[in-house]
Length: 298
Length: 298
Image 1 (cartoon, rainbow over the protein chains, first blue to last red):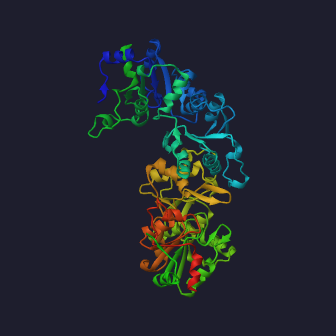
Image 2 (spheres, each protein chain N blue to C red):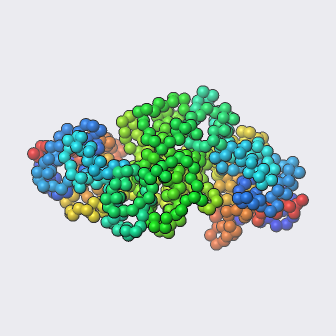
Image 3 (cartoon, rainbow over the protein chains, first blue to last red):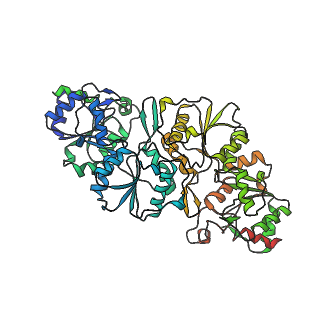
């Protein structure tokens, strides 16, 4: 059972035990345009204690630079190199985890933010926002030339997904020997104002089905995300805690990565899912109502 | 174990036992532009014995009228009403199996051939080839109005697949109460000159993944296809045989539909898959090398 943080000492103990604090953002620090009450003070407290802070998000359409604008708009302090989106993590996976040879290329189903991160990590790519691949015109296999240097297909959220991109990715995955199949994340949907839309996981599904292979997913809950963070930051996983609002992404990511986990109830997960008659099998180490609760340790 | 047809009597017995002959086309009657040797004579033989012939194909991009042009080009005799493509079958499923009320509509991911069949069966639809849904421009949920009369999403092969179509279909499936989720077929790929491309099953995969529901598939191997054929033709399933070249579509369809089955080896399935050391669990009732073998019974 998860330990419920209540007393001042509980919060102080956590501050003593963990040097590195990984945060999911939406549902933890803010909800849409509303900053969670006390979140800024809690982050300030961690910074004043010299804790390392890393923001870990599955957002694959934005680069870290673009995602930082959300922090700025909401007046939540963050540095670009504290932000780990799944687009950046995918680029780091290629550049620093598997060390893709410089002359190799990646075929991208994804948007400008993903391209920006790949470019920054020195990864050559095709597809993405290339106008010739962003069309609903018929795809012709006979006028397509397979680039033998494409060693991976990387699939993220792409609101310009179309048959040409799917066909090209399919050809690389089935005809280029050893071609890797990567997905930024497997989120089935993502929330926008007024509802939900199909997420990055839905956009890799046609390839998964037609090729008959599952992609290696980079984002939460896969521990691959931690491998990518480790490639850029030096820290002791035993003294690291993942703070999130979703059991099946954030908390499962922490567990898959052998990190401690703290669930907050300001987002998706309801109290009943952890303490009700039919609780989730994914059990966080700690639970508190809100990240703002840490203010008691000020 | 499948019975191997060899003697003249074997072929004559089958001609006596079955009144209705269902045929897959590609791999059975022809391969690409090449008619299987003896196929025309075999069909003529069946016609001379007053057998009912029905061509059962999973092709979902062509209407029966357009598909008949393939027969005409190859000089294989066929009537439009002998052809059951999965596009037509889907239209028949809506009009005659579930009898969709006239004022209800279908949101279509699919091409002109599917629309033609729906129109012929009197089914109202949205999406499909509508230019406003065939775009790679961003989709905006706030400028989208849900049509409350949409009672089904139907997904077939659509080489203009895009995010707008996926988002609209997703909204109908998740927000219109009781909205049906139908797929013309679940083929993961389809062959074209020079290779394979992702098939209709791959294009329903994003919805399957994001909505968390499997579509009802109309085409082979689903027995739904037989329900649709029965809605238009009167025949005795006990005196009906399905002839095909693929174990996991044609032969499985026959088995799922309690029909007798005849495998030919002029297409996908190799001899080793039925008689080798690790045979398929899908066992046809009969096997012959080619449909042309029936000429011995002339």
